[in-house]
Image 1 (cartoon, protein in one colour):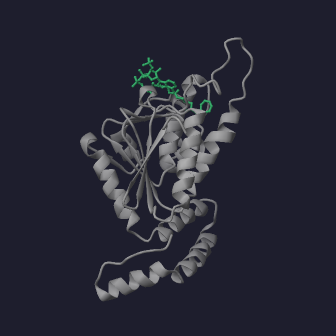
Image 2: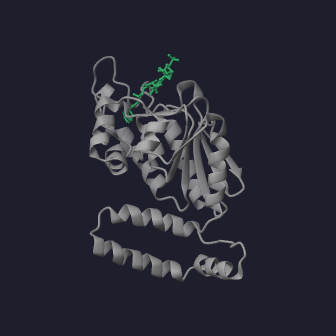
Image 3: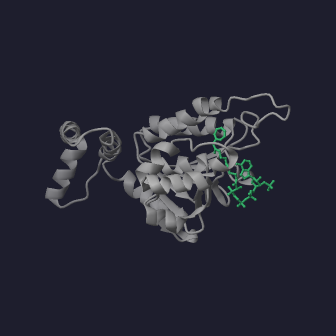
Length: 265
Ligand code: LHQ
C-alpha cells in the first residue's frame, strides 16, 4: 500500500487509527475508506487488541466525503453519477464494522467533523472532543441528506427537534454544545485530548470487553424492542455472560479484594 491514509499504532492493548489526509482536512476518498475498513478488520481479528481509538491528523477530524473525489464529483459535462455507489461500497461497510467491533471504539474528535466525518465519529461507542472541535451535518448545503448513519443516530442521540435543526441548517455545533445536547460524551481541553482519550481507551481495554460489546449490542437492539422483550433479551445475554471467564474472574477478584485480569473477547 503506497500511501498511509490511515496511520496505525499499537499502544499496549489499544489500536490507534489516525485519519491521515491532513492537507484535505482528512476528507474521505474511496482509497482512504478502503484502508479504514482494512484497519478495522485487522483490529477485530487481532486478539491482542482490546480497544480501538480513532482520531484525525492535523487540525480536523474529518471534513466528510472528499467532494473532489472522482467517485462523487458531478461531471462537468453533466453526465449523471450514482453517488449511492460510494455509500453502498465504502461507507456502509465501515459504519457497520464500527458498530459491530468485538472491542469498544473511542473517537477523539480533534477538530472539525463534517458530514460523513461527523457521523463516523458519532457511530463510535464513546466520543470525546477537543474544545475547539465542531460538528456539522454539512449535507443539506450540497443538496443531500445525512448519511453514514446520520438519520439513525441523530434523533436517537439528541431527539427529533435538534436532529432536524442540525440536519436542515447544517450549521456548526461547538463541542461544548454537542456535549450539552448529549450528542457526544465529553469535551476536553485541546492540549489534553489525545492523552485523555488514550487513557480512557487503556481503561476500557482493561475492562471485561466482551460485556462492554454485549452492552452496545443490547442497547442498540433494545431500541427495536418492547419493554418485556428487552427484559428477556437482557436475561438471555446475562445468562451467556454468566458462563464466561470474565464474570468468574470479576466476582473472584472482588471477593479476594484484588485487581481482576479480564481475558474474554
Ligand atoms: C475539502 C473538503 C471536502 C474536499 C474541506 N472535500 N475538500 C457520501 C457519499 C457520496 C457523496 C457525497 O457525500 C457523502 C457524505 C458526505 O460527507 S457529504 C458532506 C461532505 N462535506 C462537506 O460538505 C464539508 C465541506 N467542508 C466544509 O464545510 C468546510 O471545509 C469545513 C467546515 C469542514 C472546514 O472549514 P474551514 O475550517 O473554514 O476550512 P476550509 O473550508 O478553508 O477548508 C480547508 C481546505 O480543505 C480547503 O481547500 P484549500 O485548497 O482552499 O485549502 C477546502 O476546499 C478543503 N476541503 N472540506 N469535504
